[in-house]
Image (cartoon, rainbow, N blue to C red; front, side, top):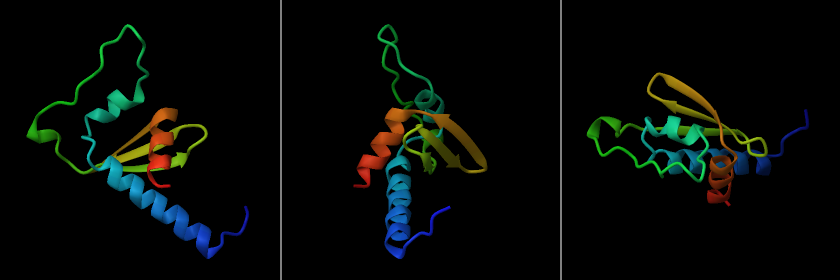
Length: 94
């Protein structure tokens, strides 16, 4: 394991914080929609318009290259593999 410089630590910490802020607007029930891949024949899924889904969601991108993202909401932890989401969260922080 390589030593982490203060700059790298701050950069990674701010990336995680920014990703959490970006994903905090995504309802928890959308985690399942994000974890599945969309084909050309599937219609685009819309987010539910219900107050019960307005809960904070925190995202932790564990591996951008592999697309591994862990979503936390309340007492739940959902692990998904979605390269597009991981890339979007990564690019939102840079």
